[in-house]
Image 1: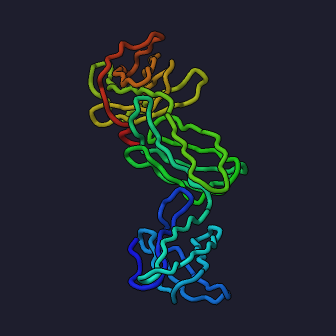
Image 2: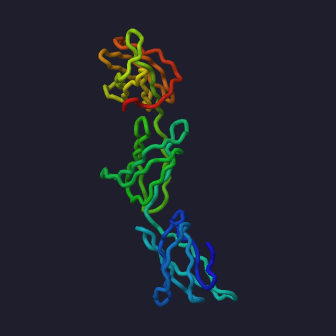
Image 3: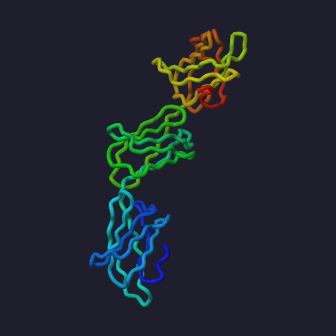
Length: 277
């Protein structure tokens, strides 16, 4: 921050962690309680005020719903104009910051939601492409952080937030894999608009897709484990498959064919979830 040309005070208005507060209000009082000047910080949190001269002054800073802070500053006797730098830290609600990563360490642009103990959503954002997220002005207390990746299972993490301060919370998503392949008729022709469904050992549908005109399907973000893969387009096809973490497995289905054994799997076919939603 640049000092004023004449007698005065200057400095930075910041939060508890030193992050500048743009547009924060600053009011200066003399020892008699008279308001002398009011201003706001610039986009970098800086302020600069001109004052009558040597003496004590009370600086009162406020920002949004944060608690105001009041501190004394002294302009000393000096050969030149008396000037003093005084930075104010304005306490406020806590902030939650972190990175959402896959098991490989890559950032994931997941949806991040903070829920209080009553199940009410108190804050939410989407992590950037690098997985970084930031939730600000979050209330203190016991919360659950729900992280939902673009594909795959969501994860929940319990977190206790203080009244103020910056709380780091990184999240590593559970490892997942995927399946991709082609649905064909018994004559070997690709079948479009067939519904493919992946069901776990408890009969729960984990993922589904509709094949494109070329008969291909893609099911991604699947937790590691054993599943039953089916395709329906008039006649069904059924296969037992195993999904491995961090792998995209290729497996084809032939309508009218069923097998209790795992389909021969060919690694290396990559894609994204869904043709027809």
